[in-house]
Length: 351
Image 1 (spheres, rainbow, N blue to C red):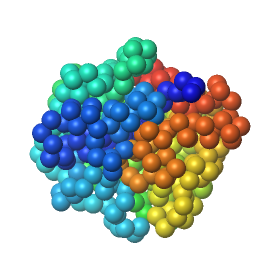
Image 2 (image 1 turned 90 degrees about the vertical axis):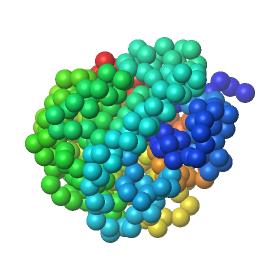
Image 3 (image 1 turned 135 degrees about the vertical axis):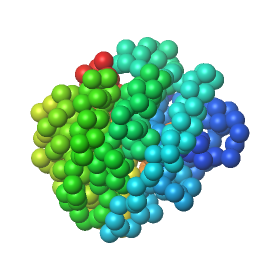
């Protein structure tokens, strides 16, 4: 059997699954094997060639206790969920950060604070984890919490999830819909982008609306990055990126990670049936055309959304890699999509 091509992935929600689990020993659960309904644990990661990625910390909205709910149960026309108060966001944020560091102490992964750290972890065959926050509700407008989290290892922040907060408005889960769904960044949000640039924290645009995207593009001096988003012209979901957004990302030498969530892939959105590898390849072809070979990667949304049955979970990544080869992508391009582009853009953002 040929060696697995390593995959560095733009987004997973495994920490949320572990946080919500009733299992006391979270590290053991991850290392020895999680429930079959989950997408990532260490045995399956090894089988699939999963080299690491952005490990998201996400504070659920009040009443949401089911892992994987984030993209699947919201209606097509629903408004944004209500804001999550800072004090309610901080407890799960710190709890999930703690789980990440406990996984590191147990030897399951290495928390990486630079692109060099990622390369070192990959050379040692250790999962390279980048500490990411999806929705900055736990961060105050004075950035005291940002300083503390950065010192702990935070290197990527999505200013908003799909709900409003003090920094701006997320994009709702609507189909069909433009991402132009409301106002952009607040003054605090603009200050957050500048603070992240100064600290060399990647600013993730995957859940931000169109005006917020424009605001970040006007302010940021770093590459524009959407860790887990798809092509709006193929699937007109509000969460996906329009052609001008893709062009703006390319102009900054940024990149986009292909989201595996079926409702962001299929042209029929949430009602799409039979989303498969061919649908994913269609999005990758479109990304390749708009972003170029250095601007595309993978952003699975593992453990955060339903994904195509042909992949199933992280152990199915080789089937996607094989499909890229059958589709005519050369070995150099496949390696760029699988991991090299992510390491490159992280060198240009977090250092």
